Image (tube, rainbow, N blue to C red; front, side):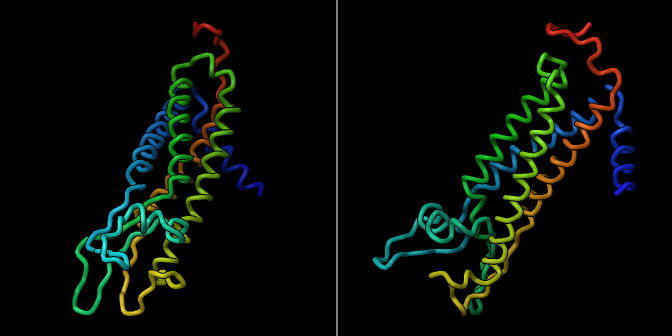
Length: 218
């Protein structure tokens, strides 16, 4: 435990100047921009080569009736290709992140992006910098836990051919791919870890706001 604390202190001391803290701030801001883009992209849905019809023979809306239907909307996200006999799908079929995960992540990322820029510019908001950064760290760690759990459920359900649901077909072979969604989970924990380092570095920095006033810097 002592060695871990020493390592953490050593890492935070590497950024214990305002110039280096700014570099770390820019890094986290870039990560939040990537997270916003990923959140918008990976909530998309596409049926690929699958054609679905209901009992009346009418086409089924993939986004609304499949991805948004029970129980599939509880099992997202997932992406897969499938094969049936000699046929193999050329396009991936996928249901992206649930609106709950996506909206929560987007809102937190947008707030983080805006407020970190305010910290970078040394505004009055900087007086509560460390408290706000700790809040963001906790929020992003919560996002990581939620996304990791959802990604695990989606991959597990997909890998079992959605066994236990009405969509299970034993004669269809499904090949699942969660790489994009796992990348999202990786960014969650990377941002949370970077924010944790940022708040420690902020506290170790000796020349941050000792000349700060409510109206700017001198």
